[in-house]
Image: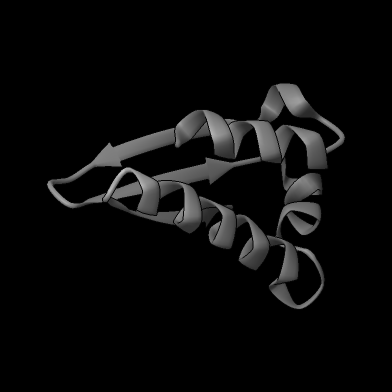
Length: 76
């Protein structure tokens, strides 16, 4: 899951080296924290949050195949 989020974020931003993804694994839920450069934050979130929502949808579909729940947190 972590690699999937990192791949999507790096494709969206101008500074792919500044993308940092960390994962907090729980029993049933994984929290994936995404950090990008401040100037790239708008590109990851998108207009009215549509890009972030799409990333969360893809993550949810991928995690359901593993019978787990994944939550994406975008951190400033």
